[in-house]
Image (cartoon, rainbow, N blue to C red; front, side, top):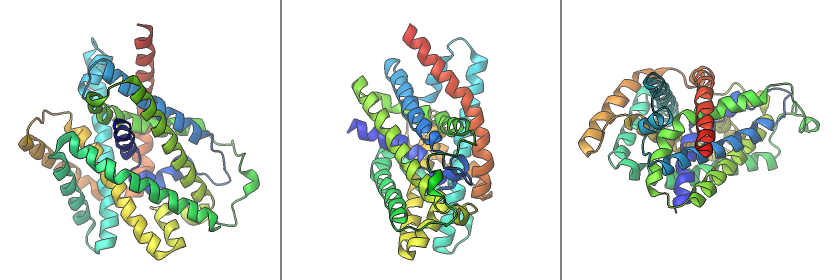
Length: 347
């Protein structure tokens, strides 16, 4: 059970609105006349490695929050500690704003209501989960993440087998297309998620009983995430011209199959937004002392109260600009945790 909890919580962080909508995959992996999947392989390996490093360090040093993780990494460098504390806080806040923005857009379509009302509804649900602390986060991810994975997989496979694709796609180029720097983009993509991973994974170290659990869970998370990226990437590649300008490409693809499937996928999108919003919000909450239900409730209200006004910014604009900036900055943190891992092994 520990393996599954780690896998689903980690993937719940990764598979948010950007991923499940397909917009994130478009920006980082799909390009016109480009069928190179080198970046997908690199991203899959890096996701596994990052998960392993963070969990191993947290378990070895009894680290259960992001603050202690950073302090342990830079024990005598307070200025550097503050820099990364601020950077990760900004990244968590940015991620939460994106989730609230996307959730608001989808709920406004479904309920025929203002976007702000949809964002507020999502915020209230997250606050309710936070009342139950890490147990609430784990429960939400264990229930919803498998549903998200299955839904994305079914829609992708169905669209591929049904030959729903644009005539512009050329299968001959399937193993070519190295004209874009997919290595840089895949590292940037993983780096964005890496910034927030320690805030979500470190609290799980309390339940880890062996290094085998860490290794197995990390490998499984990377492989499953990589396969999902590949399926979404291939589905979008087959329909590049139709889907590229869509805010929610995978939702559009589901609608091309069947209107009922589009409705089902809308629910899947909401689930993915919810799991990531919960993870990002809990990461922000971990910056403050929240050992009682009242403190968690008050802090949660303050956090979401600050984030909601900014969630009125368009979702596709946020993914295109905000994610890339934070991903580039996240490369610094990725270098740090890799260097720290090498140093720990030497010691």
